[in-house]
Amino acid sequence: MPFSVRFAAKAPGPGTASPVADWVPVGIGPGVLADVAGTAGPAVMAGVAAAERAALGTSARVVAWPPEDLGAALAAVDAELARLDLEASRFRDDSELSRVHRSRDQVHQVSHGLAEAIGVALAAARWTGGLVDPTVGGALIALGYDRDFADIAPEPSDGPGPVAGQPGAVPGWRSVMLEGTTLRLPAGVRLDLGATAKGLGSDRAAAAAYAACGRAAGGRGGILVSLGGDIAVAGLPPRGGWPVAVADSSDTGVPAQVVRLTADALATSSVTARRWRRDGRSLHHILDPRTGWPADGPWRTVSVAAASCAEANAAATAAIVAGRDAEAWLAATGLPSRLVAHDGTTRLLGGWPDPGGCPDLGAARGAWSW
Picture 1 (cartoon, rainbow, N blue to C red):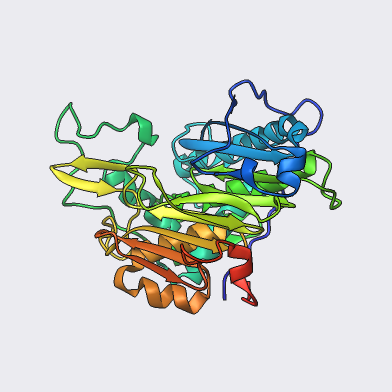
Picture 2 (cartoon, helix red, strand yellow):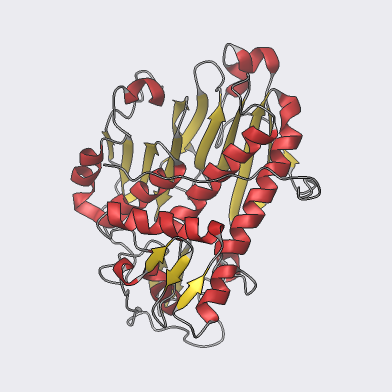
């Protein structure tokens, strides 16, 4: 059964909303969200508004209808992303997670927000049988992913750098204990929450934005939040669902299929993004916890729809790591999934819509258990 995720989104109170000056208005067309303006129903009648900016080492996009909700939505999303970054980033010296890593103690009292982020990561590890494991942080550091990805040179210019033949050991998620806000972390273990934190950020941000717009009581209107293509929605979608373009590879960004998301979430994991080289070897950021090396299975991109973006994010990453066992693993979950092999072959599972049929993920989901 898919793991359950509970999160407490916090709408910004007086004086806590971040400025929204960095957000850039965007038109609705091909990309993460496509053709909303061409749908029938509320999106056409009331209109939509969208904006995007860089965030958490990737891009963030927020889409709202009615359009006058966008300002409040952006302020709420800013506050949630800033909170998550300060809690769980392993690249910020001032983050709570970095302070935990620097501490000589093995028992830590952490904030509710960081406890949630770690708890979701451990739940994902348990659900996937360890295919997703937050203790890969040390292995990623050993392979050179030790700072924000934008700051990593494709090949070190000041010496040989980390030795690609010596990946760091992965202690395993069972070495980490979390009871409420009490974290027990063995000395030297470094956490990387990337397989779930971005999805959790989308979930938190979408819920907070919807609440900030005063629509938590079920009024008309809706919100879509995308962090690097990992998407969560809240409220009512445009009639027919949010049109979401799914690409086969981050190299081109060319949409291969447009699906319509009416509820829940959608996430994509890919080995074509966040790549670098060390000692002449091409590396990427999705590690196989069983080896400490980047996953080398047959899939270049996996997209999954699930009840939450954190769950979808974990499932997509687990499928990349599972390699040739990915189809069987995903089929057992019942989650709608789209797998693209390195040779371009595409596999659709769990009711993922066929490109020539109904594009509605919500309709295809049927009676699946979440």
